[in-house]
Length: 440
Ligand SMILES: Nc1ncnc2c1ncn2[C@@H]1O[C@H](COP(=O)(O)OP(=O)(O)OP(=O)(O)O)[C@@H](O)[C@H]1O
Image 1 (spheres, protein in one colour):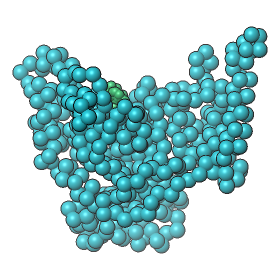
Image 2: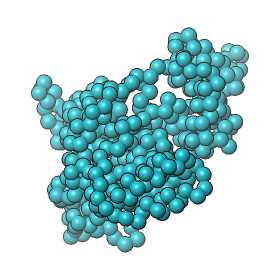
Image 3: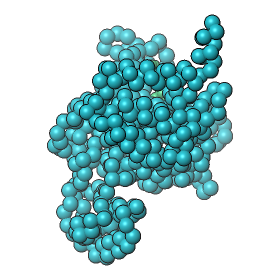
Image 4: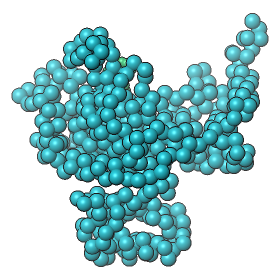
């Protein structure tokens, strides 16, 4: 199976679609273009991806990149996926009085973690949320996933497919920063037990097993299937493999929307790239998943996997738009990336005000970070990506889709049975736990 990605004009796109209908073994998996009036115009900027399952289909792509004419194709091509938008999102937390705090309407002091952020995530795309530590990346993910803690207050508009609706069970998954896996189980067992718990009662055992195996393969874990996860005192999987098992378990329900909080934390650059490319693949494949991931410091290879980038500083948006245009934005705002410095490092260095004094000392005579952030935010309002964002949100609000269908999971009796069995396996294998208890 191959995936081709090409920049096409709209006419070429139409030709490509026509060619595809005559090839049963070729499938268009995405065709994306953002233009002024919501339609593809005659510019070579549409991006099409086709997936082929046999050889000799490159001709389809080659044939279709010839002419550049004019045709109308709706901006929102994929009705299957999940479009997530958020507008003027604020998250406040009650706290003791400190610098920058305000009193809320009920008289208690509060601190703003997110300050009016706006953005969107589309099917088949990977949105990366970046920013210095403590800027609100995890809070944004939590707010979007509806998992904010009880001491926070959220205002703003979050919409799914243009509607204000809660994320139904099975439509989204959240991979947390820490892996919470049973160290005594093998990869296969961990995924299989989770499949039995998460998938509906109506699904047959063999189908659940098949789903588990497909998901294991999807995350590239087939060679480690029979390896114990391992942990303290017993070496098992590598850090990257453990991350992939956590993601694999969350993918069992085939969610349309996937949130990942720091999927590469604690991994070296090679492992980070491997994990991120697997994640990016999940979106770009025919499944057309919407993926939102917060990430600390991506390598240049990882950065290239991002479709869109949301850059936060102290809870405010510094930049939201195509990851490929961020460098141009910084240069246009007066902060060009120095040669030999990776753009993502440059972005984070420019907007990190945690070490304001050091930065002022180190880069004497240059703009202080606070001022740089202010300049970037002001400049962003005049940048094309900002207008594109507004247009996208307006377009997505008009989207008329049915409410999300809630999926079911295993019934109470099945859950009890699976959990008891899993516990026995765990206790039996955990020598300290089992034998020590027996002795006591
Ligand atoms: N429930 C909460 N109660 C109090 N403060 C909170 C709460 N949630 C987040 N914060 C504060 O909000 C700020 C942003 O936190 P958040 O975890 O979103 O940052 P982050 O960008 O994900 O950081 P990191 O990259 O280090 O994980 C932090 O200063 C944190 O202490």
